[in-house]
Length: 288
Image: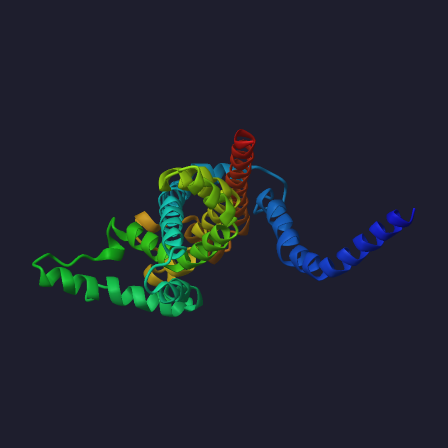
């Protein structure tokens, strides 16, 4: 009986500590998202419930273009940043020259304000920017990077540069949590570097890899600020993302269609997260 009372007391104490976060999360996320769902099902004229907003979205060429660009950006950007951050973390986890300085360098983009970040990329990829100056020096023609098909690669490069340090930190934390005894036993049994990498490192990095994938996917849906500041509200077709579409719906005060687009994007992110959870669970079951 005493154990039950102690457990109940601990639950009450835990809820008291969690209450501020739960209240804030409900006020700023759960309740507004619930209102968005209701608005997405309302007709703009008579406020009756309808699926017309979703039908118009699926018939909209702008929405199709925005969704396709966002999916392409995620499919290209996320694997690049995950593999690159994993490789850098493996390198920094070794005793290499300048390891501390390199760790600091990869973290610096995390503390750079977005406005400064955008200014840097404008200097690099402007018509009269650094990249075009270098190209012209070697006899190549100038390229209007943000108004060409190469714009998506510029945004991917910006996304990778901005978020790489955070992923490296997560991978480094995962690598340093792997007990050294496993590697010592593997060395005693004659396992080579490749065998240790796939048999120990990658297996015990599974939870960290899942977290990095999840954070990278979420961050890939948050590139609107950078793209908007670099290319404006109506950028080149290759970098016209879902956030641009929703921003334009907001400017035209089409709140119902904006809410429908937001709900669909949330459903897409939820689907990707569930797939990741299912994949991680299947992998753990396979390894056990």
